[in-house]
Every structure is written in C-alpha cells, then in structure tokens.
Length: 233
Image (cartoon, rainbow, N blue to C red; front, side, top):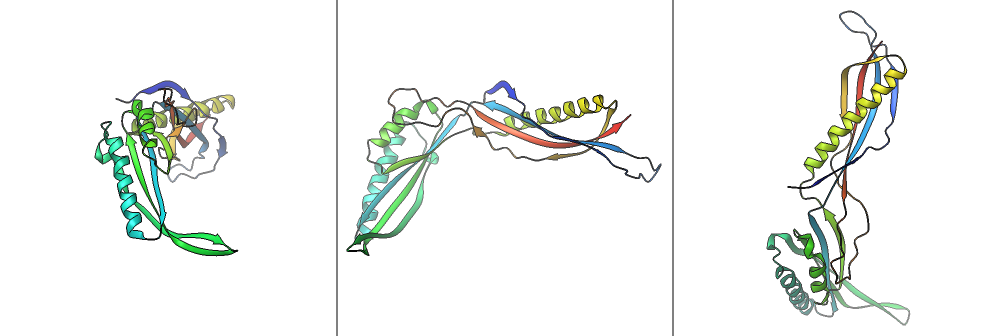
C-alpha cells in the first residue's frame, strides 16, 4: 500500500466574481455567479526508480559493432538481473545507427559507423539503487542517465488531491461571498484542469555513491479545478 504523506500543500488560486444576467425560462430570474479556481497537492513516497544505460561503439563494420554492443548489453542486463530485477522491468529494444565522422585536414571524413543501444531499467526495490548503479558502472557502460523516482499507481494520490482542490475552491468561494454579504448556492459547473502527473520534490538524483545515502524524497501529485457557484443574497 502506498504511503500518502499527511502534509498537504494548498497552492495559491485565483478567483473571479462575475455577475451574469442569465434569463431562466420559467421565472426569468437573474442568477449571480462566482467562479473560483482551487488547487491542492498531495505528497507521497515513490516506490519505483527508473534509469537508462547506454552502450555506444564506433567502428568500420556494422556487423562487428552489433556483436560488441550485444555482448556488452547482455553483460549489463545480467548484472542487474542478479539483484532479482524481473525481466519485464528491462527494455533494450531501442537501437540507433549513424555515420561516424571525423575532421581531417579541414575536411569531414566518414570513418565508419556509430551504434548505440539504450537499456531502460525499473527498480521496484529502491533500496537496491546504489548497489545496482555500482554494478552497472563496473561493466563499462558508456553512460547512465534518465534517473527518475516515480509512483507506480498515482491515481489514489491524484484523487485525494482532486478532493482537496474542490474543498479549496469551495472555501475560497465561501469567504468571498461572506465578505460581500452573500451566500453560496448550488454548484453550476465544475471543470477539471489537470490530469495526474507526479512532480518530484527535494533533491536531484545523485549517483556515484557506494553508501546507502540515496534517498527518494517525496513526490507531489497536484490537481486543479474551476468551480462556478450560484451566489444568493
């Protein structure tokens, strides 16, 4: 079960008071409205970690390059699978082949080809982060990047943030109406302005550490809504 941090951050929201002269079919009453924007964030602890490893080789023959890259890819994948990572959490299908040029006597000369492969890993046990990174570095990978802490199922956090955003909108509308000597009536419309997209909080992801000091921090999942209320005197 995912942890949802109890601290909830309510962001600033704008509100607009609009009086419209909407004519109702039955009694031709004038309906005054208040339009309010509400926002909220819910913090949670990430439970997955993603990163990408790149193998890159240069040479004259594509066939030779493919053999070398394939061998290195297998070595890297095996080093990660040794920690109990499931094969379904490994993607190694992205391959890129391009000409290899060098400059000689003010001329650009093709020396051969450059072949690279991206291997993307997902760790479900974040505590293995440091050990896995050290193991990959020892295999001679060309580079490692794309570090990203994520929440596998962010929907519960988003729904919680959505509920808080609606409460935030109602609170703001109530305070504004009260200040003007009016009261809130029924809800006329609700617009959801966001889909859930967790935002990392805290530090940048750091590697190159053999100690277990790589902490995931927290991730903010935000929601924003616009609500129009009837305003009654």
